[in-house]
Amino acid sequence: MLWRSLKYHAVELYMKFEEIPLPREKDRLVMELIMERISSEAATRSLNRCRCYLSVLFLSDITTADGKYLEQLAMIPSENGTKSRYKFSREVPTQAVWKRWQRFWTDYTTTGKRLPVELGRWINPTPEHGDGFISRTQMTCNDWIRTNYITTNVGKAEREGQHHMM
Image (cartoon, rainbow, N blue to C red):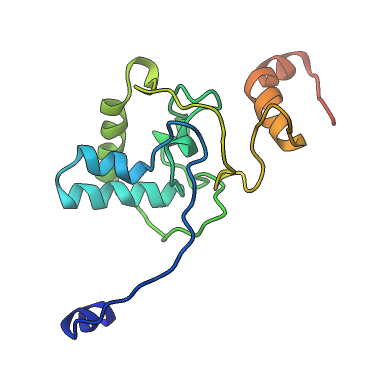
């Protein structure tokens, strides 16, 4: 009702907000990708429900650490979503909406859920990981664990019963 009243009375609001920089080179906002490829407003809204449910802003939020593939969480509904520091509206997408979401990403990616354009290096903090990001000159403990231990050594460590502490 408020927005309708403001429109009726021709009230214009100007809101100042800080722009969130892209976390990686060649990164994209997920909604920009969707809006470029989907012309139906209803379909766009339904895909946005899944995006909000997963707490996703950027393509990098749902890609592997190397920036080449879509993460499994992007295709399978999960109550966990990503760990964003931003608040998203509470959404409960239907099975039909999830199928549309999965079809969108299947069409967008190539074989093996590979991105058509690989993401580049990390250049800004991510909404998912807060204020830490990977650079050649400075790497936090959490970054090291995320990039080295979790993405490359977890399978081996689990098989061999190893546990790494820093």
